[in-house]
Image 1 (cartoon, rainbow, N blue to C red):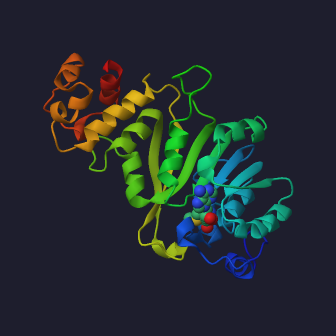
Image 2: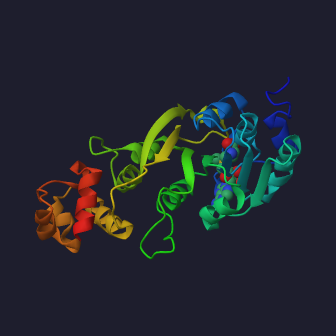
Image 3: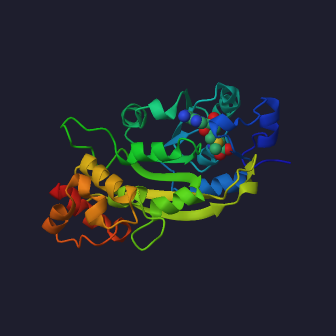
Length: 287
Ligand code: SAM
């Protein structure tokens, strides 16, 4: 049966290249091009955009991104076994796909954007390996300092992030203080971005199926997040959510406790999970 893009069926690609899924690399592949197109579409228009993808694997999402018109796609894959399959996609879409073999956790994506975006807006789209997904998100949310010490460049190099996570992690990313899943991840994502869950993907959509439901999360940077020193915000959220059921006067003791809370007019009897992002920022700024 013909595929949407005229390339071979992903099941055949996997078989031909011997790409049996490796758990250690978080390999759960998506073989349905309708689904991968739906994911790529949630990133909005890809015309005139440079896309970064992490973990293209056999290329299901890669093919969707290219078929939807991304001007250029730079994909970072750690598993060298996938490179011949990806080279076939590259031949099908000449000059548009560049594959970098390497560990995405070690890549400076901001530098990569300067080098590869060719002046176009950058969107990141990925079905992330679960074992590294949260760390990659944090790297994109909390970039390294720019030329001025303590000043992280913001807005960042990316225009949007469209990422697949375990549903549980997705819930934590989009959570606010009205929600049981609220924690450090919700504060950091809420401070710097507007984040929402787009749709869930059931385990049986993947080969092999993972144990849990997944979800696509879309994040766009806030142009002007409330000014705050990231390291201080991290200290406050770590202390506050480290003992989330305790009153703040107790959990925040290591960073200033009641005195600090009184200084910003926050009732020391409240708990971390009731504080808005703005209140966390106020505490961090008063540290
Ligand atoms: N994008 C493909 C899809 O949707 O079918 C594969 C997704 S699979 C969940 C995750 C992919 O990330 C695998 O291809 C795996 O080899 C790759 N990967 C795992 N750890 C990585 C890392 N640190 N850097 C880059 N790629 C990684």
